[in-house]
Image (tube, rainbow, N blue to C red; front, top):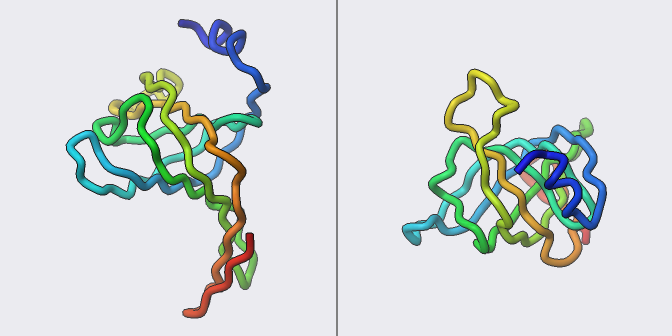
Length: 126
């Protein structure tokens, strides 16, 4: 299906974004994993992200997503939420980067904000 066809099926417009993400869940074999990906786009209902570990994912899988926001001198900031994998497809836009896939996830509720000081102490706000 072309990108235009996918866009026609969406309830919300997607906006391009380029943030790092951490994805936690259980692989298809049942093993816990922590993957690092790159957000490509975001909308009111979901996120598109790339990963080099497609074997970790399957449609309808429940995951925890942590989006890394730009740092300040004092804090690392994150948006967190539970998500469900809706689709998985090859990422043709990443030429020369074989093995990367694009994963579409829907948000399961609202995102929460979390931050950590760059020092050893931490702070969290929701």
